[in-house]
Image 1 (cartoon, rainbow, N blue to C red):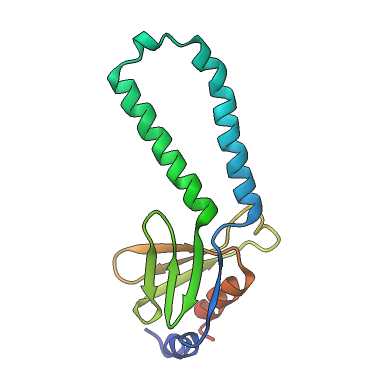
Image 2 (cartoon, one colour):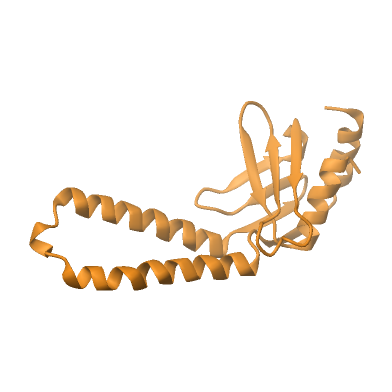
Length: 150
């Protein structure tokens, strides 16, 4: 890790910020998509021949519904925090990394589009990459500080 990154580690260990992972508009759009899927599926369900619904179709439909529901639920509930030198995001499985383990970081932020494109920090601590989303301005500022080394 570079010297400026080490300085950032020390400065970031005292910094605390927390907030939702995804912006409100993204949550609203996700909700509208879920409603649209259900709304468009209702007429089809009225015309289905339930006796021809195979076990495989039930499993595929059930798995697709479960995955969609889990992602939607956690998109609404997910929170990102930075405290005590650790970045964490609640999700289906919680994402967590100590700042001193980060070897590479990239903050993806599109000014004036955060309402649609969720700002995110992509970090590498080895061979894998972890993505942390942040809708909260204080968390976004912490991500920017971390990447800039200050």
